[in-house]
View (cartoon, helix red, strand yellow):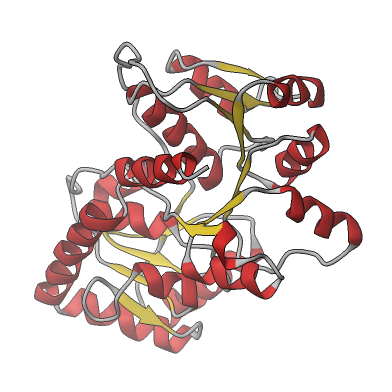
Length: 311
């Protein structure tokens, strides 16, 4: 996903201590965009917020382009920040480890993946060090509880997106191009061949959505599915895999279509929307309304801020 630069108002006073975001990602994926959007939103609310990212990473460059406070992520800097009156917010597994090793007193950890935490001694120690977990969905929360995390130490905070404008044209069936085998690109191609329709694969979804009439998002496992949310924000009807996390985002037959991960089922759903323009339009409008109500970036920032204040 991509973001749009915003002017930052002069920060006002905040009752919160400094929030230090840690993200070790070397690619600009969904988690990095969420960390960047949260950092930006907190700054706009007058919160003292600092981002630590790897030197030369896309996340560091994105923050610098927006004139947002950013510094190099390293264990020494994390240790120094943990000694101050700060809340450390780890946005991925590696930065969670760094924050735990630093002895952070107030450690918030975002959990965006649906697979269960490891159960080794080091992993159990690391997870015990977190003050609060922010699960990206109820499905992720259930996995944390199943792993032994006390429910009172977990909050569900959905990812947020900046709504996109409606497409300028409606000509492409768009799917996410990904090297991750869990994203089911092969299944999408098989469904396209079976259903007799072309699919346009893209890594730059905001650009691809300018000419999209439908978004096809197939996956074996998701923490939430922010790519589907981005399409819905533009009023693009979506066809997504029938898996628990995507079922939290898409209400079947109302805000999109849920399908089994079978080529015939996918092909049938896509062709239904190609034939029935009225249905596609209703799903697109309802999807956009759902994002406006539940999955905007500013709502994610507000809910995360409430979680910080609970500390």
